[in-house]
Length: 107
Picture 1 (cartoon, rainbow, N blue to C red):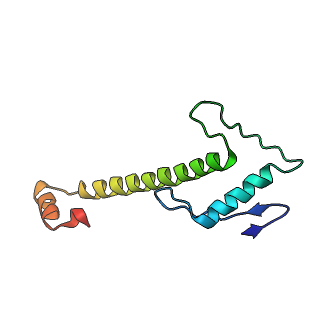
Picture 2 (tube, rainbow, N blue to C red):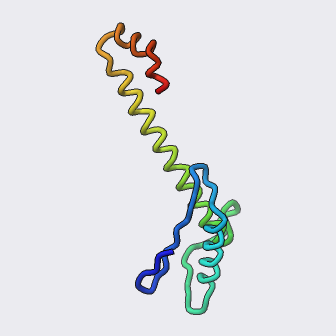
Picture 3 (tube, one colour):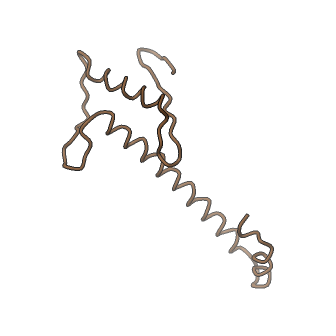
């Protein structure tokens, strides 16, 4: 936890598939309680449509998990494109076949 000028920053641990650590969930529940406090106004609109989340914790855990999964997918795509470009940069079919036979495709 990092404490700054009148604000509190919390580290939320999320795995690549969207799982959130129990300690992070506890912090989210604390933040949810803070958002209900006296003199606090949460401008997020919950439950506007039938499929949308209706609470602070549900909304934010969905958004955090989605961000982790999407960014992991983007990283995989970037790596795949990079490897494809390296594999296709061979000068002739013979060297391409030699490259494939060497097993470098799976590296």
